Length: 380
Ligand SMILES: *Cc1c(COP(=O)(O)O)cnc(C)c1O
Image 1 (tube, protein in one colour):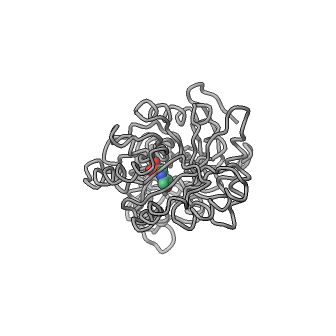
Image 2 (cartoon, protein in one colour; image 1 turned 120 degrees about the vertical axis):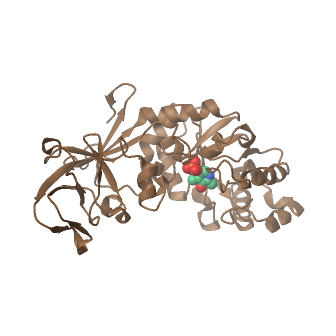
Image 3 (cartoon, rainbow, N blue to C red; image 1 turned 180 degrees about the vertical axis):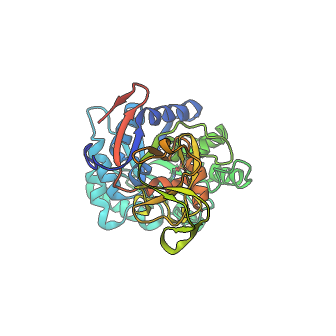
């Protein structure tokens, strides 16, 4: 996205690439395995895959995970192979026969989730007459992607199904890593230890970002960190140890002085009885501000929390700023919408969702700024 896109927008989304880099280092310092890989799916959780991937790569990250083939193709353009180095890109959705040529053309590694995908990749290896790298995903409790026990049994009985495939990684995904006390973590760890031993030549990958914080027993060889890199709180019940990457601020567009009983917004869901001041701000559900925050959300103005009153509209929210000094709540004053005083976990909870969803749904109308707070530089 061009740096000048949305140059006149009232709402600004600032991405601190220095914080992204330091979050990567934070996880690397805690990781006892070989390498912390980065999940950069969904446009790097909304922060922008190009800058995110370049920053992480410069920080030493060599292994990347995306959800879909198209994301992989885009990432391969960003992280082109250079002499002596081909950043590794794994695609979680895996490969189907119709797309296998695209995978090899762009040097992408599918995560093989079922026997059909193994067959498709083995066929591609036979066509290209060279071994093709891949990861094998084994389901240990998610019942989502990954080989179920019956298919693993078939594979072990007929290992020739893997011929031509160079298994680099055997992985599984934890269902409760964000809840360290959940006994299912230990059960999954044990199951994975058993199945992982069936593929001694491959490296093992178990931990997402939260899994790294569960401790060395969960580390295996390669981690797949996502949310924590982008400043989300991997363990929501504990204080967030990650540095803040994303901040959204928006200017007050209009202030309404109310002196007689009056309602605010569509459907009259908020009623003002006494004197009040309502500030209108140019952020709405089309910008990813959840509509469920109507009468439930909050922003921060002049260091104080101010509640969202009335419904969230497509382009606007209304805040009750009666408690703020009028000169601090005037047209043009900046309100913190996300980050700063507004914890993403807390705002997400008020919306009935999680910070993952909040980040990945950020809209496209913000004025986007990339900075590096370590050097106080604009990185446009
Ligand atoms: C998205 C994803 C990750 C990253 O998880 P975080 O919780 O964001 O750290 C890791 N593994 C798989 C399979 C994923 O889909």
